[in-house]
Image (cartoon, rainbow, N blue to C red; front, side, top):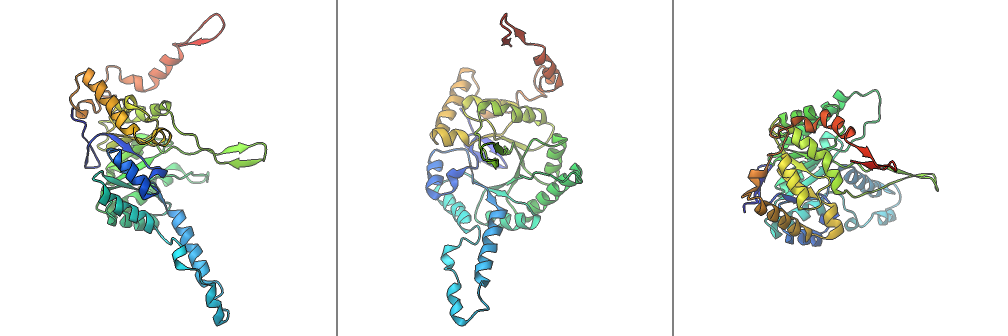
Length: 338
């Protein structure tokens, strides 16, 4: 049974990838994850804002009181107490590369071209095998149109791609007027892979304290359907690698992703809840299914049920929407039956 797959020009032992999560924030966590032998490991995101805030804080304390008397030199903080840059993050990448042969993919969540380029170079220099750019921007100004926003994305991404010599993937959200077009344009500027989708964490309203409250809901297998649909539609239309990163919780979810056309399927919530040993279990679930149906490799599965290959291509589009709405019945009590 050949489970190897190709992603971003890298040969992975199998398509189950550990996506960005708190598990990689310590070397102990990285080693624990690496021991489970995922196809690859995506590091937690390095946030440009966090680095800038840390740097600004140090600048403040380094200059605070400097116009006072000589004794004011004691105002200076202990340098060791400040993490003034991505040093720890980069150190984790370097140590991970020494510890395991599993490909290590850096993750960068930036907000400005200059910041992304600078940090991307550092991540590449630390030995990362690839870089995932995490686009997380909420446009709130009604005077800025979609083409302007997308143009900024593309310009920033192209500058990063041109600045480093490792492959770049972009993790996007589903909220584009034309998702196929933005994916094509990203590929045209040199991106080697599209990761679907970034799960935007929606705030909640606490009606007891009248506050806006952060709310984190982990994914379920039901969340797989949105990226599954778009990967299946775009496979064969856009020359790039695809990764699914929402709703992957078991071997069956991985198989669905591969059939749709994803090169890899990424999982986080399942590992956080049920442990990194789930990677091996999910792989075994895949193998069992493939053996029962006499598949010999992941390559045979890849994209075999994308829109271009299925008998009913419209099942991924509006026709299926109408079919679903017209397929329900009600029992005598009014209960919905599909």
